[in-house]
Image 1 (cartoon, rainbow over the protein chains, first blue to last red):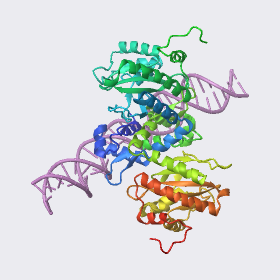
Image 2: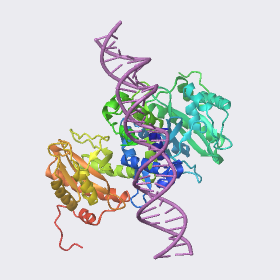
Image 3: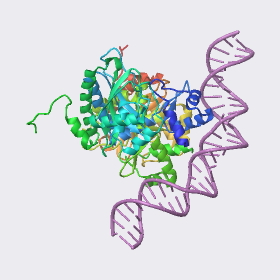
Image 4: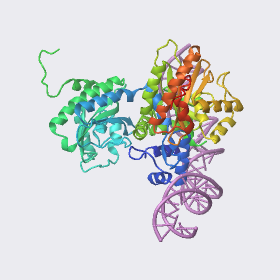
Length: 270
Length: 270
DNA sequence: GTTGATTGGTTCATTATTTGAACCTATGGT
DNA sequence: ACCATAGGTTCAAATAATGAACCAATCAAC
């Protein structure tokens, strides 16, 4: 592992619940020597990726990332476009909805929207990366990814996040086949013991997935009817998210998402 | 210079006008060997800081920065708070308004808003860092910075961006004194030959500047009356930006910004 | 106060990583 | 068929990263 990666990995320890981290704690988290971590933090700070609280001397994310986001969004406005789609989907189904972008072999959460219409909410941490094999977002992305990606992911050890996480490669392949049929993935308590989720892929300009859109529902509220309703709403949001970010839906996908699942085809329809 | 810095500096070559950069061009820009740059890009890509266009193989900013921005904004919502302030100021004065955050000895642009009410606009590149000595934003930040920072900045060679850039340390110190009196800085064509600008500091929780808010006006439109009007509007925006991001105005500053410059004091006023 | 525990930070000889000239391959233009 | 330019790789030489030990400051308990 290169020095650059070691330094950049430090940034991943920041999260919504841990926005400031001290030197010694960083060294513990990263399992590296204090001196090494300090050098890395100094370099990150010099480049504005972290900044130091003047009093506590703890480190937090710096202004450089905000500027870089502004630069990327100016020409490639994924975030600006996806936000209203996520928000209106969340409002429509009344549940927490989130979107994430493919980053290597994980999904990098972009943001979420929680309409807060129920007493219990799903906890969602924007700092936590999502695995491809154990989330509805991840599996829906994987289903439409090139075969070599699928082979690579399924050949490595698959971590079980709960007792319901699917870890058998052969069974996962059959799940991926189902997802390719329906276009979406419904996963029950595979990543979080109390959450049932529905996810679908957002496609890029080459017709391959660049990210995902998903709805997370507390398992206690996840009735069959509710999940069907969410699946329908999600289908539309997926289409919209893909086309408005400049992506193209793969051939089969467009057809599937045109057909409302519960509506029988009309004979005279054009 | 450490390896981490060399890699991170590559990200600074991206800008609104240059959102994708190829390997060889990167090597030219950075003045480093192609092999070195390639290794750095591979590491940045592995961490999601850049991604590669599948067809052209050019590199662009990656999804990791979006996630990190989301994490920072969740607990430290500078961007979300400053946006409406910048937008309403831009609408009020009818000119391009921008905000930037202090990052080391430079200002890192956060975003800008252009109301587009005139035929000519100021060009503003979010990718370009702003120097402290040659911009109204920078000088207003410098004026309220600790003496050791002022000494450090003024003792290093000061680049002249135009023939009107102030580069004499002694004269700059007198300018800083004036800025401390008025709270704001009005600078004419010092960074861009065709732009006149007015800037003021945004203060952090310790009463030291964390960034700046500024209005940029095409020099041809920069009449005395217009600039005075802008100065007044900016004063209010500065107060609002500082307090709503959790900062505190330094002692003298609060008083100054209460007093409209062109209004004579009333004798019976409390 | 004094002690001890914890934190941020630094030093420098040892060690491992980064570096870059040369090389390979693919593509596009003439 | 040729040249120019692009992305990417190799491996010995050069350089930068590493970490155990050390220093200083802070804080809580006694």
